[in-house]
Image 1: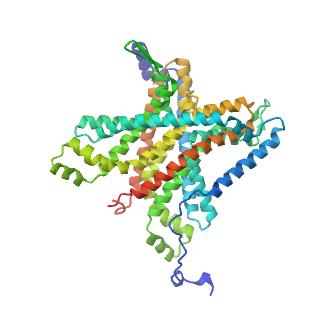
Image 2: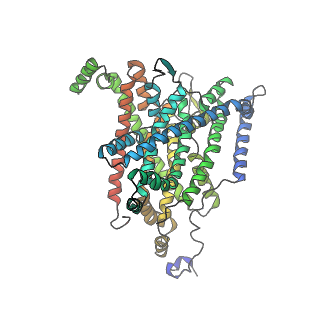
Length: 281
Length: 248
């Protein structure tokens, strides 16, 4: 039978036509091996150019690994502090967004939208240049080093995003919960803290973790404004090794790898939680 | 125009708020260039990232495991690494490895300029997210609709172009909206490789005119305005594409 002449109606139903809904990509051991192989091959090519007296890219990374990793730890510390600060302020802002008084809602909305819609880097510059480098508090001078200002700069967008997450989660709780709490004579505050927010927690967790991973990846922006975190150290290491251009790809590749190793598990966990906490109507 | 310039000159003398970009012709030209560069970066990267997203989502439905794995790997890597490091990796890392030519002064002329690298890395970054967004949209298209298209004799490409994509696009517009806004904000990262966009120009201006606060305020409002325009366009599009009776 000539297949071109067959009417589509006459074809037997094809079972294997669409595979099971788009398999999710998972990292396996051989993926890591493949990446390692690529790195080795790439650095091998670079060694061929480098000559015998210079360290190979792998050697350079090994030599400076402790310094680079300490920079990475600093990045993580910044992200944790910014996340804590941003979450606390953002929670307050999110609760303001569902307040019963109109002006409070409006103020919260304006602040949230403003900080959500401005670029992280601009907000970071904002904090860097406009927060004073020291405070005089009751005659005591409190110094404000660069990295604290960076934490403040990162916590501004975090605050706005957390506010949206909190507001969205509270709005997603069925009205029946509010009504039954009212029927049980809970005050508004009691309802919020004892009934609504505990239920919100599982809905807020996945987007909150997603946000944390974004903050971690944003901390490298601090290098643009002169905080000596991993990316700054990377370019310093490059300069210390004589500024060879072929070192740049492996060094920045190493930075990429560090962030990947840290953020990938968070991403996976977020997805699993998202799946588990899926809202079932 | 002269009225605006005079008013801002008066504002400076009266209050000390020095918005040089509104009365100083040099600063004004600089800032206009920066603004146009930001718009150019955003528009080109948005279009490219959409192309990458559509293409990637289509490839993810491929029958070949290798193709699916490659697209999945691309998404995973670009989603989980900082965009700034990606830009550095491309511009400094890959850019120096690529062959370059020599210009008339004997300096090394790289194959791709910093603007082009910025566009490439921004599009790849946003494109990786777009693939996921489109994929979720495609998954939302009922299997029966695809089967119906198949029964009508559509090819795989035909089904994708005429049936799945138009439906999926409508489902994923809100998420897409979000990502494109994000991309617009991410264009500031091009600052790090000296692309003269708004932030870069603003830094130059406040370096010479000592008006950090004013330029900061201008920047924040300019970006909020740009995002507002983008969101407005996307909402108009969303409304124009709405199918009566489909989704709410």
